[in-house]
Length: 377
Ligand SMILES: *Cc1c(COP(=O)(O)O)cnc(C)c1O
Image 1: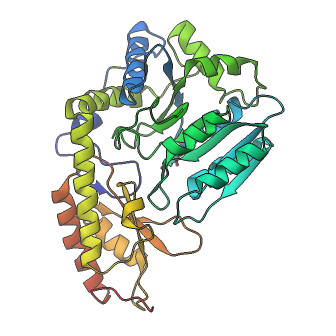
Image 2 (image 1 turned 120 degrees about the vertical axis):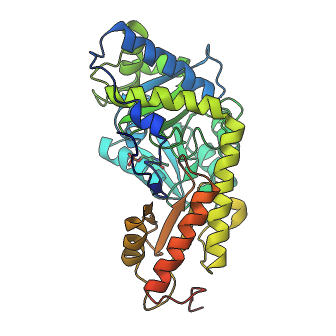
Image 3 (image 1 turned 90 degrees about the vertical axis):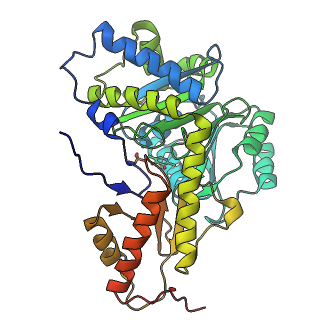
């Protein structure tokens, strides 16, 4: 198993992992009901609260087996009291997903929409909260991974708390990369999956949030069996285990990834992602690509480039050329504009981005796409 091919993933997760994280999955078979395995999960729950600087008396974390979307599902279906309403602050694909979760559970919700390339309007959020005193739960996305825009969660959270609602934030594409302070950022619940900021494997997701609110939610309507937050929390508290079978090998790789996270350190890791992000933007700028989100609103992790108006442009052909050479680029997630994304997640650094742009430029030339790229207007 030495010499595992190193692929540079510029898609928004799963991300490029270290070989030590890959290899950490290869362990003697173990029944996850053994104490030894429970100890690993207990430490993991503590470490996750530490990543967002939560006071362990006040905050806890709850693990689930599933991709990151399970967290959105769990928060929305578990944290709404009877007779109350949800507010989704929606400027992109991932908040739209939360609105769809509300729809699927038949929950009353307001879908407060803003354009995908602009920040939500705080005055409009406050007006909505004031006019709808039955809103008990507000949800938004920190870094809208579909575009890469950074939403002002601290300011939104202050408004949410002023109107006595609970604030859940989808931090799947920032947590363990862009620093988060759960209390100062006015977040009640944040979330991620192991395969993004932590640079581990797919299949493990977690919600980090306020213990008291979880305990209160025991009295709320139960809308899902597998995806109920209190049920999973309570089982962890009583037994130290997941209610149902955990993703055993992913837990081992996440344990290793957490050790590597703390060894690199929050500040150094964020500096590295920033270096990668800057190198991506410099490369795109040099080739003349336009981006959807203006520089001061970018979360520093996802670049959304607009397709050039070149008759020879083919995302698929460029993708395939890069993919064959070990670099993965990814389509965009905006319904009205054709875009592709380059992301700064994962165990990569500036040099990988320089190597990528050599290949990417070759790919453009191979397709006879004009450089710098052209736009009609
Ligand atoms: C990746 C991601 C998710 C989870 O998506 P899955 O396909 O379930 O892994 C949720 N929210 C955001 C903001 C994300 O970037």
